[in-house]
Image (cartoon, rainbow, N blue to C red; front, top):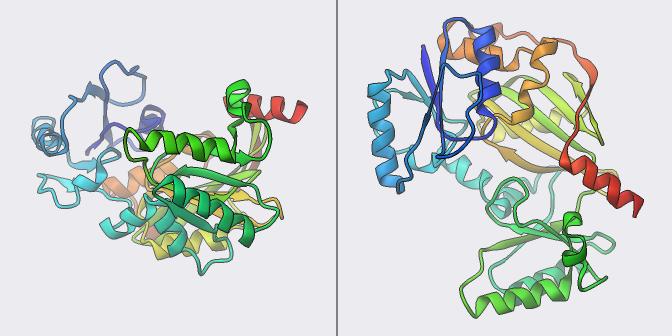
Amino acid sequence: MRIWFNRGFSLAPIAKAMKAAESMLEVLVSTGEGRPVYDGPDETFVEPDLDPADYVQWVREQIVARRVDIFIPTRLREHFYSADLPCLVHFACSKDAFTIIEDKHAFARATEHLECHLPTLQAETADELEKAIAAFEAAYPGLQPCVKPRKGVNGHGFWKLTDHSPAAHLLHPEFRNMRKDVFVQTLRMQETQEAMAPLVVMGYLPGPEVSFDVLAHAGTMLKYVARTKFDRRQLVQTAHPLEHYANTLVRQFGLHGVVNLQFRKASDDSWKILEINARPAGGSVYAEEFGSTLLGDWGGILTGRLKPREVTVPSLDIEISTTTVHSIVDKKEHAS
């Protein structure tokens, strides 16, 4: 059984973990030009830089040439739902669900019925943003607003909005603080050159963060590992108080395969659903060496060796040590 992940995040260690547990599996990974190549996959090859239509055709040709049985898109996924490919294509959810998940405002509206809902406003111009910030502060006094691109990943474009130093974003950009009027005025200047990308306004969540790595099958959560992220460590558990919310979200969005749900604690100690990543997170490999078999069981289901009802849930409650750039920044911020 040969599966192929196209360009994505942390795929080499994920491939390595899947292969270690599933001898029938061969894993191929494609990457971008100039990107590093790591051990793990059976084969790693470079993708060309093409427009979406040509890229889909290139994928179609690679599936035939490399004898791929299952294609798991993690890049340009929206273009493959209607593509006629000569193999099985593994999607983490339906196209409609994916469209919602990838849009922070649409996702917030779709989760309004949940107690863990994160109130979110949208803005497409600087004037709209100024009004959205004022409306947010009136509705949620005491919460620090933050802004993000309506569509985006990995914290790109994230800023906490303050009333403090107008040069905060220049003097200490690592803290991601920017004065509200400076941010709005900067966008007004930007609009004289080109339209800004749509933004969302939401409350800043100080944390900690809990990342749920979930193995699901057609909207049913089979097992999960919850990773609570602290300064330089993570608490890894297979039983967590937020399990009910995770289960509800998996069912609502019909999630399938290994996906990632991120919750974060608000300043009032309530938990909020931040986002769903319709793909495996890089940290999903952490618990494999301790017997979670989350990725291994996914490989077993893909090859047909394992039926979803045969998946077993281990008992893990351990602490692992990690070091990240974010932990260093947080430590500096708390000391300042």
